[in-house]
Image (cartoon, rainbow, N blue to C red; front, top):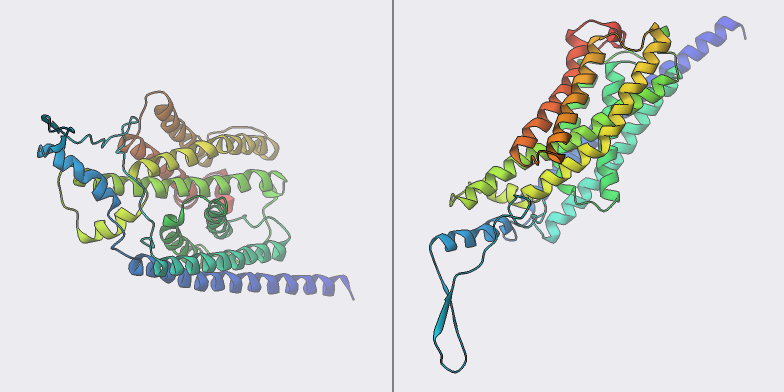
Length: 366
């Protein structure tokens, strides 16, 4: 076999692997869609009669306003003693002292069954998508994140992996499933339509072991930041729901059946803070690794390239959020808005800089 024939054979093999990768990505989307409907069934068919914990916890506050006393009588027929019920509606940290909701399944067996089916389908889709990412890497013998299409499919794979890892660690995050799978499907839909790039070799600047270190940590950090952002947004909805109940309002049927199943706002706030705080040091390392790689590739560590600038802006935004939580005692809605601004900076660095801004990182393309 001549060298040219061997080259052609290798190229054909690579093309076959690239086609297998595409097939696996589309297959994972199909299974994610089935998981999406299973999560919907968990929410819709889960018992609504077993929810209402938030309302029940905050209802005594109304009784307190109405001055409804409790009467106890001492033995021996002595004087009756009127005692107002002692109700705590705020914890010492400033959040309402209400219990977590029963979850999307509503606490019944039927809803729980659909939830378990949804998780099983999520695991299957994750494995198929991971196979697609792996085939993409093998098709060109490099890391599978040389352009935005590859970054997208890897990012969604890692995001689902983070969710499944939290479940494996016995964390109560099943409430995240529906929202996660919805955005993963949107992300993959964008990847295979607008952002799709044929499998190809990298530009010379990317031929470095720092590609594996810097970009992989950036993807992982983004996936964890995303989980934190979803929990932050759900916190804002749950906090508004609790506010309405505490002030004597009557939420709609949708809020009662959906928001009451989520963890308490205090739990969501604490979860998002812990997630963001845990991954922030790794984001710091990501920026440092990128600077070292820039020194090797371009002869300078920092040049205020748009991607570098927005990575730093994202770092500053998350640092402000964590600093405000740790020193100024910011909790609740103010901290949540700051966390969402920080994640918005990460999203712009991810999409906006690559699509709308030209710089040294423009080789990644779309």
